[in-house]
Amino acid sequence: MNWDQIEGGWKQVKGKVQEKWGDLTGDELDKIEGKREQLVGLVQTRYGRAKDEAEREVDDWTRTL
Image (cartoon, rainbow, N blue to C red; front, side, top):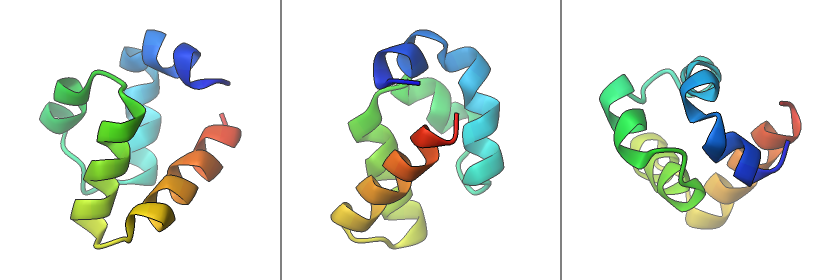
């Protein structure tokens, strides 16, 4: 699934995001509206990851969809 598809179906994908990153709230996920860079930023901040590590984690997760 590419990121345009994820962003377009964000309401459906949001639950899978919370399965992967349970510390992210529904409100935070609603606010980012499926924007990749904002998700990377949330993962980076909430989990204390470096930016490149958070990007890699999000990209790896995307390939599992």
